[in-house]
Length: 408
Image (cartoon, rainbow, N blue to C red; front, top):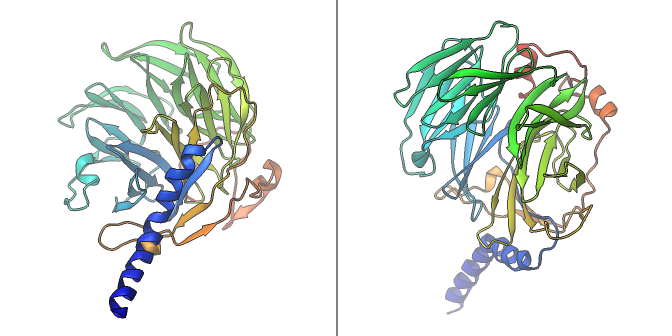
């Protein structure tokens, strides 16, 4: 009898170890009034450069070409996929397929197969003529930018629309805005393309005075992230008249990405900070506390099923992913938010279950209250990491400099 009781007690302890964080989290989120750190996920060996959501799964990608698939409801690791080649920009989703961007090719996986750990993975390796800087989903096709602007259809046939003249630089920014394709060429000219006629119909010049990383429509405006002479910039374009409305320059380093969350727009940067802006007035709201210790390159958000807030995933050069719960704060007149008020659940690679990919919570540490150390721009720019210096000069980066910044 004692042996049976001991066995049952052991199983109960193991169950509590596995599920206590989730139970605690559900209880605590009901009362949450401030940003709440749900998880800190580790395991990537290089910088996390992209996050995608597909059927309640989150796919994270690092610059080494590794994809890690998480169940976003319980944070379990479903599987890890090694592409075999480096990646420079985030993959995209197009009609149920994941397109991974490599230097001269696209690797294409079936997204349903990726999230099923029991499925064999078939990858289509599409080699293009010229170097690739990025791609986006446009209706039935995928538009690819780099040394050329090309279109790929469902049969993986390639149509070249334009060859860029300045081959010393690589165009990397492309996105769908109001049914048009907006891209930024190597000369920092914004080109607006008609997706039906497949022609360039408008150009916006002398706006980007540095280099750009990302373009996205948030609210009524087009937000373009980048930097000028080492200072982070967000250029705000009014698509009604295609003119520059404002330039936001609060970040102390290169701005990588923006995402609209409710009535706010979050921006992430080389300076390790997450800033929140008013989507309508463009006014700075507050700094969002986070636990990253290196540049933050990407973020992903979605509304929680309960409708009481948002879940935000952030990926960093520190090779980790933070998962934040953000309660609905649009009805609160706040100009600043308190620090994160929750424990941190560290999920190291070594605790992965061999059968299900589920990770156990190896340790819990008390709230860090946003006290992680940040170095100033000057201090960080002069420091080295394995002999590498951060780029802070205002020179326009050539291809080798643009792609090497992703390898940490």
